[in-house]
Image (cartoon, rainbow, N blue to C red; front, side):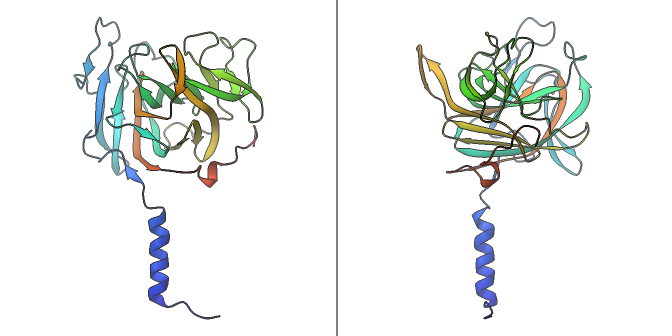
Length: 279
């Protein structure tokens, strides 16, 4: 076997590294440059706090486990939002729960979320967020899909009574449409399986968006796939394939770190096949 010259081997190695070296951070680890904050009404409050005002320190950059992270206290409902819009991308990040919960959510499971393809005004949905799709981050429901006045098609098991039991994603199942979060049926689709780690551990989140398709994955396992992303405009449906990204403050302390993205032209190989339920 002929030996590869060291210089050529080094060049090949550099090429391989650079081929997957186009991940770009969405936060600089120091402040919220490139993002803006929006806070709705505090509990028992009368008015929304509004844009880029944070008197309660809901959004902070902190040092945690030896690295920078975002702390979202959850004290007031609201969002941390990118200034730019994104389409055809792979987003990945890590999250873990804190300890604090706030009224009126102090007795409920901890709740947050990653919203994508966000459009329209701040606070349009329940005074908290933009219209969008949601990658649900909630205890026992991590990886669910929620519609915030966006529209998708999903394969799964439609519930006979979705107000009591949500539709569930099932690859190869009946195709149905999800739209209004407060409508009938409600806009939630339950995940394929719960892959969240125990409380206090970091969880990896992957969101893959390409054209009208989006794939949710928790700790490397696919939990959801939606297709034909769209929205209504002037009474007509139109494609929804890009938008801003939002992180939710929703009554519970949560930390996010290692938030990065890269543009894609095809679905990553790891997420091309969706496993069957229970696998």
